[in-house]
Image 1 (spheres, rainbow, N blue to C red):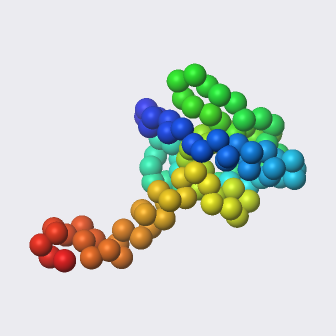
Image 2 (image 1 turned 90 degrees about the vertical axis):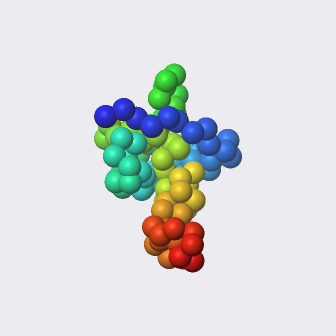
Length: 105
């Protein structure tokens, strides 16, 4: 399955990621890039954040996991670049629309 297009993230996140990487272990919960809205988790030592020309930027773990940075919901308990998307998805059933037409609100 084709990956969704990479969405550039706020550059401040890279500084925040580096702070967490220096602590030794990073735990991330993220949207799997090719099976939205499936969530996955990776944790352990991060070896690098790499840029792949067509695919975007990835957090690379020592165990071989590669997590696209724009899909990170939470890292070490802190909101990540995709947190707002996750929050909106989770709260959608609570809106008055909840899948209905505007006339029903």
